[in-house]
Image (cartoon, rainbow, N blue to C red; front, side, top):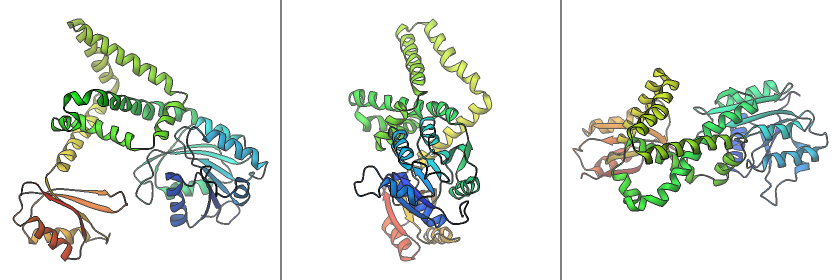
Length: 377
């Protein structure tokens, strides 16, 4: 897609060494055929900012939340007017401050927030993207083409409304799980540690631990930035702290009146606010996640990577199972850390040794077995 002047734009990524900067560069080059240049404040040998501004048509800021407004401000001061006619974008989880900093330039401005870590897939299909169009005219068609190519579920929203929503969607959720992680770290040892808790797991515990583990495995700067740099988060944290304190005090009192108050204020009132249709849908989602967790706990399984991603590949794989008389208990697809699509196939009691099944799959030239287990055998 050409820019307003009829030629493919040169895209500069500030923060090109970061995870999203690297993903976006691959996307722009492979999917849109664009020339991408970059600067990263953390790299001494990066292209100088002024040289980058002189070459770029589109500038994307993909830098830590805490540093983004200052970095944008420095670029706006350095540009000195040469940015007029450019499009400036940012990819941070907070939108008010970066957008205001970009508006100090003469460039056209939009704030973007992809609400997922850099995916292992080629696009953002299946993920949400917040879009804050602030000053976009000449670049509107190109920006629309970019968003269409990204294939995200785009939500147009004002920057302040975005930050207010993110204080609940991200700030509240992350804070609750960060607090859970701290409590687990302090108390779990007396309850058998994580292995002991896992042995007595519930679906809710598993789901909570999955979110907590995801946060702890991520970049700490992202999660602290979401807490510290969104101006709407302090109010959310104050309400969360007050609610937990109220629950704590009621449980400490322990009488029937306290129980009734908790039932009403923490269960019945919120349930009425959500409404029956929403509660029914969320309850169904919970049950589905429970089924998925049960499938993933099956002790007899085969994980297979199918390198030829084309119609009929899965059918050819299943033919091997059918030929050997192997019944499938479940089948799920996901991606490895390397981005390879693979299938985890849960198996009933095997009529043949697992090694024979593995050899048959690989011998057929269909795919590569990534993992195989039969704890029952």
